[in-house]
Image 1 (cartoon, rainbow, N blue to C red):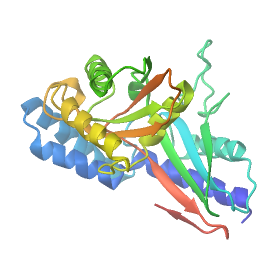
Image 2 (image 1 turned 90 degrees about the vertical axis):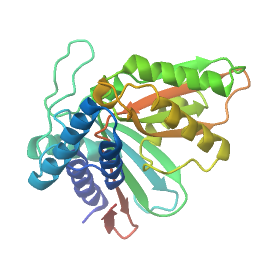
Image 3 (image 1 turned 135 degrees about the horizontal axis):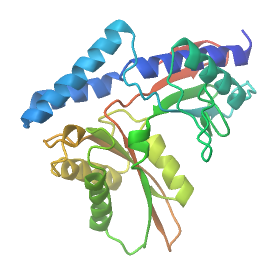
Image 4 (image 1 turned 180 degrees about the horizontal axis):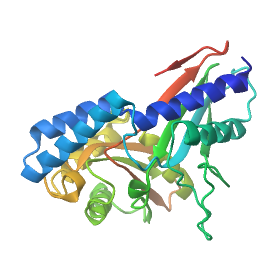
Length: 288
């Protein structure tokens, strides 16, 4: 097959996998939350979530009716031999998948609210291409629902703010969000960089599996401290109260200007859908 044909096939498979199955690490975390939740309402809520995952898997049905905004992140090796129009291919993949899977048409014009009907339009699917070392191409797909995206935020802090101040901003946002992002959530946080870079880092952080700590010890410590603090807020599953408000906290960071401290927070709902594939230079690929 031609490179763009391979990519089209891969993209459609990623979309199908992402909207119908929960990543194994997320499912395990939700089952553990169900087993250890202390609130009666929380237990019932998590029981329904776990059952929902089982039925979707067995019957090849959508995990959630909100199939989100289609988002692709491509990590393209500098030595990759292919030259591909990613946006054209992914647009075709999303349009086809909307009809064949099917996906709920979610994408509308920001002012007229006219629905495109196939989840494509100006700037959609969302695409980020990152250059990396090597010769393969890594493609990740994340359908991002409105509930979690609507409570995401950017905070331009003054650089004199301490770690405790950063924690306070995050915890305040979690409590304000309540049940809107469908907790227990995963929090992606971008710290440093510039405003737009912080938001992208927060989104990229959500691709990391549960239990994966940042390699920087100071950042890893903040991830752990935030995780524990968030689960003491009592927001609980679906905002109805309980022990489990958050499944994990992921922080990506970048050095920033001496006069600024960007902090971006991107929530992901319990249905933390994502799928990734690696395409080799010879056109073979593996869905991870």
